Image (cartoon, rainbow, N blue to C red; front, side, top):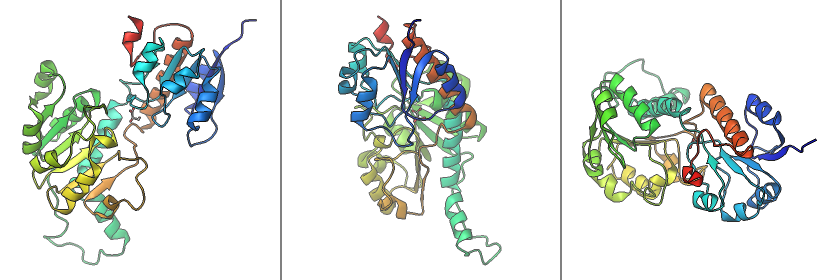
Length: 327
Ligand code: DGY
């Protein structure tokens, strides 16, 4: 009997995905909710043919060095900033990821954040729960910014950025975008305008970040960029925390240079309970739940499972983050 390939799954994932993997491989699932330490991860990878990771697992060159039999890493996320893709490619290891199945869920959450921050949903809910709703209605209470007919600036026009743009058109918003490459066909289809980043920052009522975290986008939005924004603008980040300079954001909010912020990602994650941002009423923070729709998360798990199985079978991955590994 031929021995099955060994795979290590760094966290519990949907049962259907585990069943798919178990049918083909000898599988170990890390039982804790917290990630294995780097030391344990390397030890688990030492005799594994495939490892299924997520954004909390540091997959660096030491990991690859410790894993001589490894033929694939499969990341349960679209972002791969926790993985040294260069080191993977140098060792001929394909890295799977999960684009195509989570953009709509993440765009929905982006709109939840935009609406929550603009119309003060979380802040007013807190006020009601604190027993402060004593007067049924007042014409001047709880005014917020209108989302409809405002201008949205999208930074990073990948799949999520495109889905956010589609939703924005439904809200009758003017949509500007800035991205590494211009996408004229999508621009025309959705009806949006490419502009350079400074113009986007100056004109937008909502600036929504959707770019990957790379050395180029680290602190892409800092003090200088916040100074360019309207004092009535709201900054939305569902990309990666370090795309925004958090210290600069706090200062800009306190000094009234920005009207608010809505963040699904922070630097670091989780945000410390005593972080000063949490003292501000005009900040809404969710705990990195952009892709956490039931349907989307299941689809992510299934795609990650298929990528893993293709990798250990020596087949081309369905969605590969380092396709240069095949050339
Ligand atoms: C991603 O896919 O990169 C998200 O941040 C986690 O789902």
